[in-house]
Image 1 (cartoon, rainbow, N blue to C red):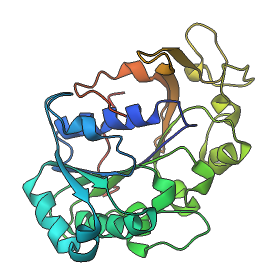
Image 2 (image 1 turned 45 degrees about the vertical axis):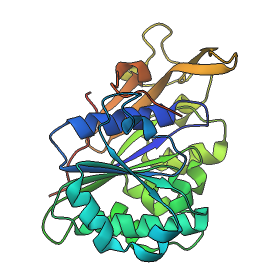
Image 3 (image 1 turned 60 degrees about the vertical axis):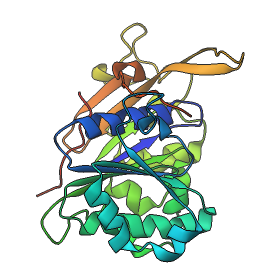
Image 4 (image 1 turned 90 degrees about the horizontal axis):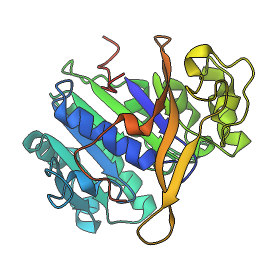
Length: 274
């Protein structure tokens, strides 16, 4: 299974991706969970100050870029059931690191879930990027018969490679303000794309299973409160989950209760608890 998690900035996609990663670290579906943490969104999985410290942490800097190939990353994946790889190189060099980590996951004898943060920078639309990265979404199988699944996380959906988007078999989509982003997924949606307009707008012909329990046929919403620093903070948001089996469901992010605090044949399914 390959999953897309996407919404406009500030919708809480980092929190949701963090919650999904934690759920699958604790679950039995995957032997290993590896996070490519582009923007330092997943360190809550690591620190025992913010939770039980479920994952090991490794910063990928110039040394790793130059000397860590898939074999070295593979050894690290073997030793750690959950691994968060943080970016400490330029965004261009990060793509090279991501390729090696992804190739190590695909060559592993374990069933591996890979979480790719800021995926539009790793697999950009209209630009060249390593085939090994694209192969993760278009294939996922390993030579040993294990499965490599993926979660692609982005707020810039129109900038993520269309081949990756088209090969995702499940989607958690929140609100968008850009028509380009909505158009990037309209061909794979079985409901009106207007369901993803921000602000709880009326959506004619919205399937009954996607109605808001309190206001009916409206688009997705988010709830904001003042944070400790006086700045607005998203405390809950609505998402639409859909997959290629035909399942669709409107979900609030508060459906999940992660233990770790968020700081900042077809393959194996990704546990979403729905």
